[in-house]
Image 1 (tube, protein in one colour):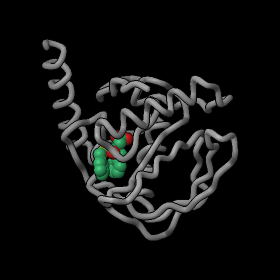
Image 2 (cartoon, protein in one colour):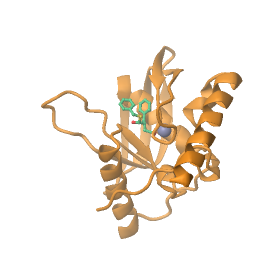
Image 3 (cartoon, protein in one colour):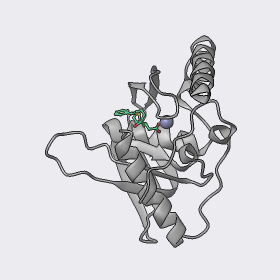
Image 4 (tube, protein in one colour):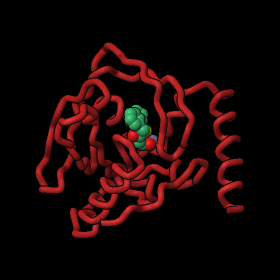
Length: 173
Ligand code: K2U
Ligand code: ZN
């Protein structure tokens, strides 16, 4: 297992539409394992493959936040939303690819998703609360969409300008 570097916005790879995973290979298994380790290390509650530079429809999440509750790592391959609730929820979202910036995003409160598991089986589950927000945030990543794309143009460009400055400073070392 290894911790992989997380791409920082703006990066063209974060704006790409990711292709489906064609086959669950040992390499996909290693990628999922590394993504979970990278997510927990960040720390975060979700992470999508394009965020570690792999353009594939796969994300991981574990939104268990209660102390003492066992972690619940999930690997979702070729995930699809099959139903969404009418009612919505607004959450102050962040992103591991856009560090230290946040914005309010309104999304359906509950989503039912279908995906392929590492076990090769098709899974279906309804998510609510932080799990629903995270799953939709990660699915956005697989479609080249960031949470800032749900914000107004002025705030989006302000955040992007700050990220360009941060990357320039990091490049200087
Ligand atoms: O995709 C990512 O960048 C991981 C995000 C996922 C996420 C964003 C907003 C709301 C829910 C999930 C990171 O986990 S951001 C860090 C974080 C940590 C705890 C709760 C919410 C967000
Ligand atoms: Zn994100």
